[in-house]
Image (tube, rainbow, N blue to C red):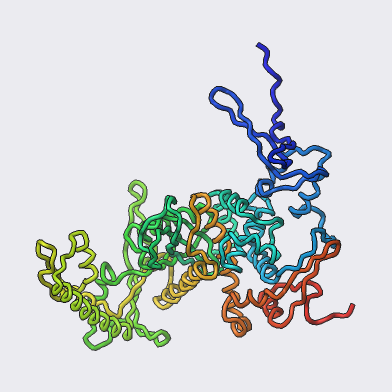
Length: 581
């Protein structure tokens, strides 16, 4: 039986006109083969073709990889000049503008364009998306919008008419959805690898999580959990690793809303290793404290500074050995710089490796601190808690209202300084002060502790490094404040992943601006926040008249202070001073 001539491999990349709904689409016809061997063709639209045979690319074309674009075979008679114009692949130089008369705000986006270049973010995004500059510019535009306008993306199309942005085309709801849903795990990991290549060695990195409320009811990760904003919304959890050395976020991970911090350390360490981050010192709070996490860090040789609870284990043992009969802790050293007493203990700890191999903890140390003022406050809080709990329990007993069986454990935790007994009916039978609980709270009052692993730090140095993690908290405040990402307004997994990727890009930009502002005296004196810096830049405009070169309005006053502080070169002819030619 004779068979037909086999189709050329390039046939599926030939572009032709597909007339549909009165429009002429530039279309290819990819196909799928079912189990019977029958081909099923579909149309993939790359843009439209006007009556002059001029091709106008759409977002499908822009978000395609460069490799996929190069495979497209266009008819020779088509005018493809708009591809070069929009994608920035044409010759650069003093070209005339052709696109209608426009007068748009440009200062904030010009400023953030320079931030993206200074942080290497523009180059990294272009690498992440396979050299596709248009996609990188669209991601930056969406990140700028979070930073500058703090509204939903439903308004971005109107915003682009008022503000000159990096995007070479208008971002519609459908194109934003397509872009967000097109962000893959590969893109995310590639961005981490690019950021890792820009980091130095031995960087201090804070690890923490934040809950993000969501309006979506079908996301995999949503749980009721414990909403930190006390909102009646389901939530997911986001963990962010923030470099305290470069002052920018370097990693993020989306997790279920009921995931405790102590269960995430091994996952974080594995992904940081896969992304190419090496020789980092991680700083974590008490939420990450567990025997499993400590042994994981020992086995991996991970350097660590972590806060630990004083009411158990080695810290409690050390506290019990300290004599406070004279009012000051005997055997502890006093630091006049911090007003704290401190003492360091070497700890011996081993974990089993593969087979009979035993791994000894490298420089595992306990740092114990004592604060006289904190002790007074802690003791006062204990007495206040006892008084409040007594009032609550007395009111419950007088009311005779039963406590449901499933709520009794929570009830006891809320009244933790009391011994409580119930009748079978659930009514409160008796209560009294739990002397052991009070004794333990009194014993640990004024004390706090940390552990270090793989580091040669004094207790005061360890405390200083741990205190730097306040920057991490500021990052979360920025994410939920100026960036407006305290609510997720997505309903699909792919959209959620894409939105978090864009938010992470915005966090890098915002963190850099905040850090420079905090370290430059001239910026601190003139601008009370990063938002006020951007507000000052809003007065700068870009004016584009058809058939003429575009021009930017002059930089004056505080605008020059901002540019000089950040090291950004003011465009030619825009400085307030004139130099004779």
